[in-house]
Image 1 (cartoon, helix red, strand yellow):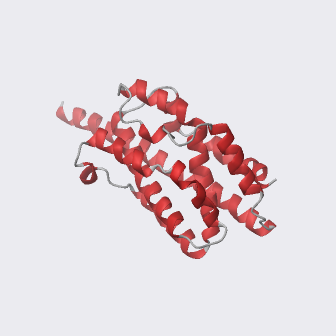
Image 2 (cartoon, helix red, strand yellow):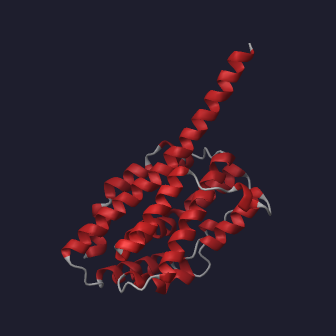
Length: 223
């Protein structure tokens, strides 16, 4: 079954993403407010790009993703979260990073050249959100002390049973009738999607490190 091949074929990348410094610190409850704002800002642009491309695609394979979008849409929740963290003028402050722009460029590139590869990016992000959303929401909410606010990204109000939904999703992947070349391409693209996510995580962590070094250097110079 292709869904099993896809899971197994991306297992190392999945593990690598979870072991980035940013994610591992997040899972330990170490969530910096500025880093978190950068994270959801980047996610907003990634999902806004991907959801727009999926809505517009006429590719027979990629069109299968459209059936789920009303239930999966993340852009709306992210807009609410950004409004909470940045205020009503959030669009002036929530800007995409360089790694985020690279991610969005790849999504556009795929949609133009091989639209069916959007399946790889869709799987990587949405199934991950459904699988770990509840845990990540609890961690972020506690660490940032939001009292339930600003966490709409992790909520799927139109999906009553996440496990049943994921089973349906995997069954649909298995029934796409992909040839071996297409399967290999989707698995390769999914691994690249994990890399693009890791690039964003590492960039955020790198920015934090640079900020810390700047503070330290300023303190040294001030002595």
